[in-house]
Image 1 (cartoon, rainbow, N blue to C red):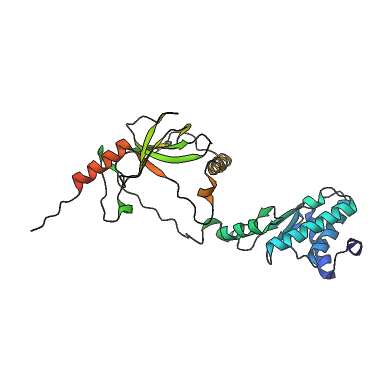
Image 2 (image 1 turned 90 degrees about the vertical axis):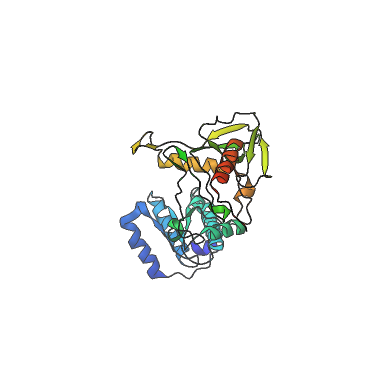
Length: 287
């Protein structure tokens, strides 16, 4: 049938026999990886034969070569077979791609255009090339009910003292405007009420924000070593992440030169921070 389809073939007969031998005991898990020139026609031959016996193939996996180009070529072959043999599901067979896929590869594939349905990401799933280690530092902000601050000549290392709450403020268009840190004693910002948001260390950077929606981000799960609320399921966490990403403007999410997302402090926390700073900063002496 391949000649009638107009597909150029260099069929490797041993490969075809191998496919048949492999698929017979594993019919329900027929999901293999081969190349367009010989492997895909062989795959299609076996998939058509399985269809005659009432079984449905799952798809193919590409793990080398030009992933975007190959996926489009494979999809075109599937469409031709669907039309020629009147098998309505054939063009929708799953195409999986793998091969050291990382964030840059995904951006590149999207720019080129592709027909990939699923990605197999293994090597770069746990660690990221750009940031292979998660750097975390825990800083003391309160002890014995007294707020504490760390001072440094490096502004990025100066801590914001005291126990805090954090809220996300949304605009009328539904996008997140910024996150704001508050002292725990402060009330939560109200919808349609003006809130003064300040940069924690630069006095002139400030803005009045009138939120259309306010979301409290900080939720207590453990207290005194005990779980005090149910931990959400993985599906719920994933849905939460997706919804949070949708609330960010596109310029925050672009891969090249993204706009930094603002995290501000309330006016009360700003005043407290700088008061404590002045009280604890050493005074130089000249003579």
